Image 1: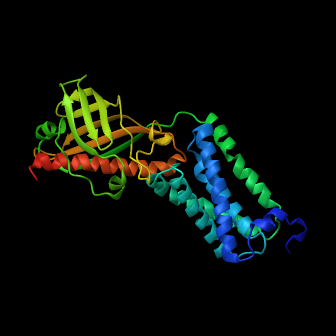
Image 2 (image 1 turned 180 degrees about the horizontal axis):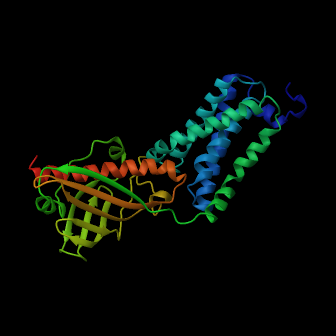
Image 3 (image 1 turned 90 degrees about the vertical axis):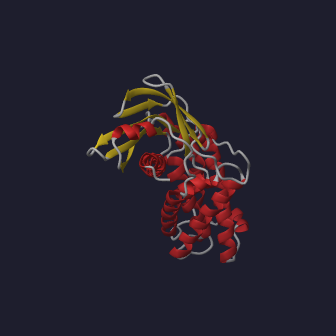
Length: 328
């Protein structure tokens, strides 16, 4: 039985009687509160972590369902639907408010929707018992930026992650090495992420030879400056990363959208090309990138970063393969 003794006049005025109108209003309200929570998290702590990608969506899903069920108990499917709708409204607000761009919103969507649904699922059961929880959910959502700051204080340096991609080339190592140290313009990639604005390689040149020479790899967003640390012709070319361009150009309704996470949140530290002979005419060419990123949960975002790096590697390795084998 619902508790009718704790009605709140301000909620009575705010939430319409109509189910459809109520769903729209509460979805917008929860989205607006989440926009402020996300903006405060970014400005207060600079933290793109568990609080932002798990806590805020979860509390948003919980809050919107508690508001939706304020007047009348709602069905589970209705609760989950309004939770998803609120996340869509949140994404549109972040886009229009220049808080985020399309690419990062799309990447965050799976985890955000999942936790919003979990919050909505919990809200479905809570709505049956009390309306008292609504104010508590609002307070908890508003406090998440402080939680993000606390989270940041307890974090250590993110681990160094290696991503290795390989191809087999029907040429001996020396012929491949000659194509490896410098290569001309590559074809524009067809992957949708690159078309949307994720950085992709264009060409590479090396100034000098041997250890200490500088490799410049031009990407669609700028140049990597990579001092050579190992020059073992024709076996291994290793380099550090002295300078790197932005990892992407955000797709947005605004020109040149500058976001905090586009600088120093994904850092490539070093890379290498390794050649291993299979026989006199075949060689395995491996490309490896070592990187760190400061966005959590690491397991989720590593799926995206590893996928993108593999696609970049394939773009380079396949180009070298075609050049070495004489395929145009």
